Image (cartoon, rainbow, N blue to C red; front, side, top):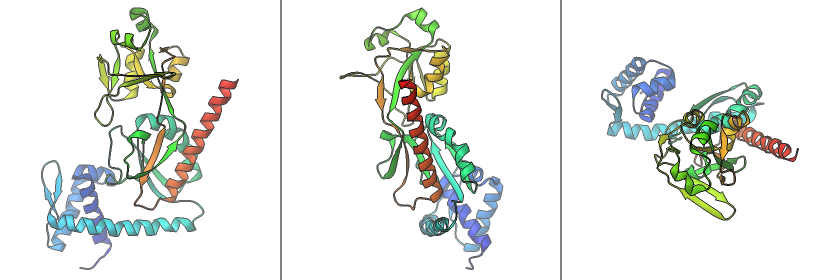
Length: 311
């Protein structure tokens, strides 16, 4: 079979369908219509004389022939991608597409602040940031990298810390504390309305509190459970209860008086954000530049914090 531009395009469609498991998600990723992808697949299967996918109303699965072809294509397209990526060594600056999957907290605290500078310094790189708090297979999802808390990074990935350990604190509105009173110690939290947080793994996060060598991990009777920090903060501002979150996320609300810190002697330091990527793939130059910029931005933030504390 002749390998022309049309066939290569249709094979790329097949790989996208296999990755996303359906026409709709693959079409969104490729910015085309599902009907266009379906037409491409029918044409490819007709030319090959072999069925590659099984279609149903919501998803697609691979036939045995499709699975064998996919394994070959992933290896081949991987070699092509690495070959094209190698050309970046001969450019003045990286070029291409960079896709990263990021926690919502990390997107606001570490990624968003550097992207304007990054796109200005590297105008030939197209960046796509997918904000997602659930755990994902970044390789299977077609991402170059992910950003998660250090303890949540898969073991087979290369992980680079971004910034210092993250401080976790509790906060509530003045109206809530006027109604229910300030808790006197961690155990008193059991008598309060506390807002639980369901992590991307599906588990509800226990509140980890520290004061010197005294360490507590509280699994409370949550009055509300959410899966996104902004929602938790909104509930807390409305007097809905006590929230436990990253100090950097809640600091603006503490500064303007919307929230007050609860049990300030009982905070906790956790793993920093880590950017991670596959150990089995060549690191794109565009990603290398982003990692450097993220780490530089985190260092600058630390210096600003230290300066403000000293002043």
